[in-house]
Each structure stands twice: as C-alpha cells, then as structure tokens.
Image 1 (tube, rainbow, N blue to C red):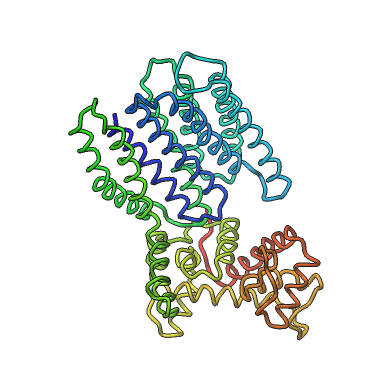
Image 2: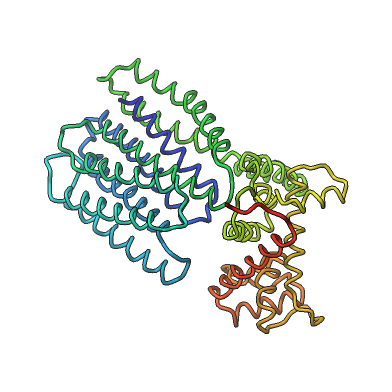
Length: 457
C-alpha cells in the first residue's frame, strides 16, 4: 500500500510543481498546482494515518479538511478556463463563486468531522457541492470555442472521473480501501493536470511532449533513488513495527524534497550563483542566460507557423510582446520561425542559433513597434494616435512599470518619466491592457504583411 501511495504522491506532486514552474504568473497554472500538490499531501497524510494507530483519529479529522482543497482548486481551474474575457468584473464574479463553493465544502467538512464512516450528512454535502460545481464548470469550459480539442477531451473525461472519485473519497462507505480510492482519484487529477499543461502549451504556441517527458524521466530517477531507500526500510521493519510511521513520513518528505529540487533546479542554481559569484554580476547573468536558453529549447516546435490562422498569429504576437524583455521565453516563441529572421541572420552573417533567432525576433518586434509612432517629430504624446505606440513602447521596450506595487519614476529618462506620469494619472490599467491587445493585432498584421506565413485551410 505504501508503494502505491508513493507512486500517486510522486506523480501528483511532480505534475503540480511542473505546472507552477512553467509560469507562476498565470492563475490557471497556479490553481492547478495548488490542486495537484494539495492532493499529493492528502495521499501522504492518508498513508501516515493508516500506519499510525495512535494518531489515526486526529489525522482523520485533519484529512477531511485537506480533501476539500484540491476539489475547490480544481473547480477554480475550470472556472478560470471557462471565463469568457479578462475583465475585472468577470474575475470578481469568478472569485465570489469560488468563495461560495469553498465555504459550502468546508461547511460539509465541519459537519462530517472526519473521513471515517459511518456516512454522515456532511459527506453528502461535500460530495454534492464538489460534483455539481465541477461538472458545471466543465460544461462551461467545453462550450468555449477557443479550447483546443485535445484539452476539451481531457477536461471532460478527467472531470467526470474526478466526480466519481470524490464519491469514493469523501463518502467512506467501507467498500473500497482508502488507498485505492486515492490512487484512482489520483489518475483523474493527473489527467486534468495534463489538460492544463496542454492548454498552456497551446496558449503559448509551444511544444510540450519533449519537455514533459524529460522532466518525468528525471522525476522517476530521483524518486526511485530517494523513495526506494525508505520503501526498503518499510519492507524490513514489517507492518507492526513502532518505527513504521516515522519511515512512512520519511518516505514522503524525501520524495517531496527530491522532486522539488529537480523541478526547480534552475531557480536554485540562480540562488547558488548569487551566493558563490556575488562579486561577478556579469558571470551570473551569462550563466542565467545559458540556463534559460537550454530550458527553452525543448519547448520549440518544428514548423511552428504551419497552419497558423490570423487569430492564432495575433495571439502568438501578443505573447511575444509580453516576453519582450525575456530572451529565454522568446527562444521558445513560434515567431522565431519567421522567414524574415532568416533574412536578417543571413544579412548579419551570424550562425542560425536559437539565441540569435530570439535576438532577431526582439529586434523585429522593436521595428514594428517603432512604426506605430506618429510622425510628428516628438518623442511622446497623449493624443489618441499615440496610444498604441505608448502602450507597447514604454512598458516593453523602455521598461516603464507604472502599475507595479511601489513603482516610482526613479531611474527613468525625462521622456519615460512623462509616460510614467501619464499612465499613473490618466490611463486605467484596463485601458492599457485593451490598447496593448489592439496594438498587438496591428503588429501581427505588420509581420504577416511583410512575411509570408501559411494560413490554416
């Protein structure tokens, strides 16, 4: 039983951290990571509860509340995917709905008291709220036309089985052992996690298979090395040993630390570089650039712009503009496949390398942004004809972060200071977001007008 629980824990924990590492700024990925990692914690706690007769009652009362976390998190993921637009009102309504569902689930957990039988009203409340909310959000997600077909399929299958898995997990009828219920639900949760990863790769225009397979293979290796030792210890001590609980705890903590170190190897390397090379900022920057470029290479698609329609091209352009200052993300952008970049590389006489293509894409975007500038001879203006240029040039090229917490105009040149003051005092953040989206469509049209790219049939 401990071995199967360890497998479910490792897969859920790894997939949650993997999604978080892709981009911690995306709400969908963060919520999915919370759902997967919290489910992994439930698996570990349940295994410890089964092995510890002395603390089984206490752990059972704790587990009933932890069970609610992945369920609510997954409902939040589906609600985020189903949200039709990126507006303050839609986000506020989504947050209120999530809060209502979470309150209802926690109220059911309070009534249930523990995950042990007999069946109580609280178990029914939790099961009903989770299943109805999740299935409703699943239907809303599938009805969105922008969802890629494989993601919609994974969401449907995963959500249906997730609802069924909750029936076993939350309502302990005693017909199925808890470890088997957790294992079956773990497969469903992993399926939903894969759907989120596919959605994000589609949204970014990136490949997923190579990067995920490499991360999965490394996870299997580190989990086998670290978790295998604890499993051997559990097999040696026997089921009735007083040290079995401690070894079970050691098993899951070892797996958690080992997988986390593997997934976050690059950020940890950056921390170590700051400690070891604190006197060499140039060396730290060079090493960080090499690491980020290496990590981005498996995310590049072969023939990234084949069969890309106008809407998808505009979305990829918007993503590239958002990553303007991050070469590691531009390396993975499908726009590095533009034929104009081939021409630029040949003109410069430089080798066709991923980092060079990312630099040329950055220069190409800068040229397109410059063409949005009104030809009145000034460097900054507040009229309507300036809005699209201002919305892209100052935030992305210059680096003006007017809406960031504790942001100031310190270090900006006089023109950038004017732009910063204008953003802060006269431009709502939502308006800037709309202008950037509209300007990205103009940039996409400019790139597509100058560069031949295949259209979808």
